[in-house]
Length: 487
Image (cartoon, rainbow, N blue to C red):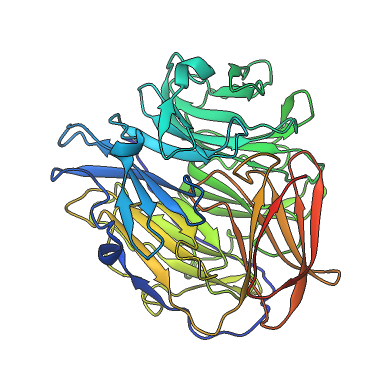
């Protein structure tokens, strides 16, 4: 199983749009029907999660991957929790055909064939991955072999990342591995893929943990950051027909033992910053433009550089004040578990730990993943925190956002003909002033952009899709949820 030890930090420079009351969350895991996210009664390792509306009914469903541990190596079963629309969930993995029983370690919702339904890719460690095609009737079919995606498993797969790197309107897929070079599956546009990591010059061979797509240089195409275990990380700049590795030149190689990366605009200045969890000090690289990045975490030793073991992070405007906050999954592979904190962006380059005061549990967990989502469609962001080592530690917790006095604009971007908005950048403007900027990825967070705004105001929403096309909607009022399809 993957080892990790990390210290955590978060810093942010943000522009709050409104003063709000202390954010409040409630653990509703049991009443929602997802208390036992891990299968069986023996020792289990939960590994990852993905939020997505697979059945197209307007609310968000939850897929959770599980691992049969070395302590009790029994068959592991993943879970698909269908949102019933009334605050509860039902496990439908078996009836829908996605009860993967391998050592699953990652999962992604992505409409790979642009048929208007979210498909599911499951990454299995040292075993065959699975691509499940959504049939549009509440069921899935395995199409891994016929689609040409990871037909022959080489190395040990760890994680993946979906993105339309060539702007041709369909999603491509990067696969991180141990013990072999990474794979890059280019979408042919007809439901099949071909592998071209070597030809595209992204065949990293350094035991990669995680990858993230984002247009860091704002040139209109997606670039790729790859986190490597115990070796330099890579940033592959997209040059159109191939990639160029530039991490060292931009001082982004970050030689600690890496675990995950996220492209975020934490300071709402319009470009993408980079957050990395490491075994060692975590890093937040502020993007100053013109290929200049500064690690603003390095000077913080008070609350942001504690000796936590951080596996991953989830980002969203959880207190609805206009800037991005973080939930950090801590404690996996630690001796006694650790607290997984809620860190609120207070502006001016600071985050504040609000874990205890906001109703988030302060008990120790084997935290492995977190994902934000407005699962109850009330306009504010909730989140799921996934734990491991069940039953010694809690398997997972769903926190409902009960904060009062907030107002939001929620944007659901969709690629042309597709059910996802992967790779889109969503900008919220008041006149010409940028109020918020979020990027949609295939990671654990739901594919939605939720912006805290001043009640009674109206805004312009601008979506920049991976092919460079832009869709704009004017006069979007606070309290609005708007779905915008690429034309």
